Length: 91
Image (cartoon, one colour):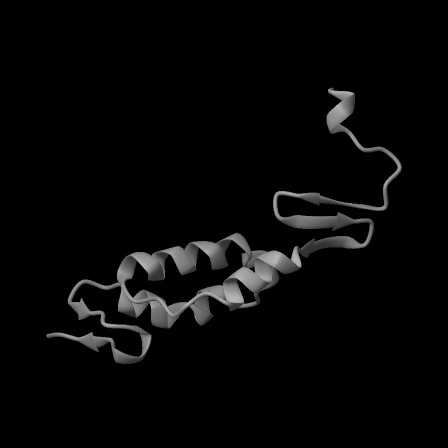
């Protein structure tokens, strides 16, 4: 162990974007703000990026799979994606 990278006797600490405390694990406020202030996805690549960010926080979001169902439908082949509000299924 590298003593410069260790912290002993602390009540909380940051680790991989989370705050670890004796009571449990929390998300850093900056991570929540970054997702909340993201612009609306404009294409499939940005939608996949949003899903990845949400997956990183999945333990804190109840029913994430159900919540992301509309995203999954937008990512199916044959969907014309203009934006979240204007996605159209082509037959």
